[in-house]
Image 1 (cartoon, rainbow, N blue to C red):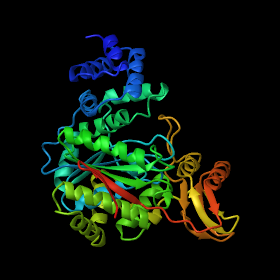
Image 2: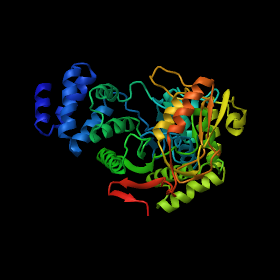
Image 3: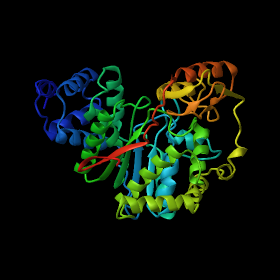
Image 4: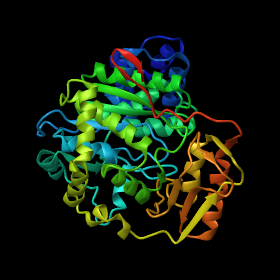
Length: 442
């Protein structure tokens, strides 16, 4: 079997066999296939596409290129969720404790963020003492005993994806639905969960800018999961503005705490309850979405989900007193309110620009080697459709030096577009995709 022949076949629109796909993934991961040949094949895939079977085989081959987590020692159906990424996206901190408090095991492998804010691991590490490097035996023990553990991803989890993405990033081959879906789902398959709920973001702050593209990606990922024997739902959620109010690592933990205590931002609460409901439905804890939603809300209202977050913190070395009393946490040195310069309705918010406003404060990473400042970030008070009077506070910047705060404020202001006429608020959840297709919210 020759890589040259495989490239030629796909260049002319041919269908690759399972054996050819496995040969490519194994050879490239082992360093036997050079970058220039892999780049040629990736470009051919972008131009000619992959069918359902090719996409599923590629994904499973990428998953099997490294460690495949064996969760068989964990009792019951294992649940996992994944977000395609957004600004202010702290739903794992809410969803996982809700689901675990209802007896569903959540064995969550998460990553660090690259971009405007940190990932789930960075957020959890903003809690003093919290350890995200957990030995496998302790990880499984914690899930069996308390139904929840969250740890950093293994360095050898889907290594083919890491190598392929690095190449795609510099060869203009990122924006292909099959390759995006394979990249995401290879890590989910390698993580070993039985039921996976995907939060597929759409809008200005998301990778997929249109609802149509987001639905297409969701359908591809659900199809991969179904072919590989997993139960998968994908929920299409809005990212045309910040999810919730807070952007920044500890600030987002604090906001998640507020939701688990029964308060917090209504949009964030709705998205989180919806994601939790699908996990409960998929794992058989409820016979309908209505029942699942009732259970999720009850877990919050009873305080069980909040206590589960505290227990997670304690089990992984963190000081849960910061969860119970978040006001104890160190505050950023500079606090600056941003005020409206005119009367009007908030017409649009460029969520990506808000994310960049947090990045310049030090809340995220420009390079993977960068460290994050857990205490800095933004609070966004005015959302699309809100009427604002001149001089009213639309947000607050929390920084650690004046110059970075100045730069952040400039980008924050630039993210807002104003309208003299009323504007409809955004819809937090547009619908969901299962193996039967897309179902819009009624």
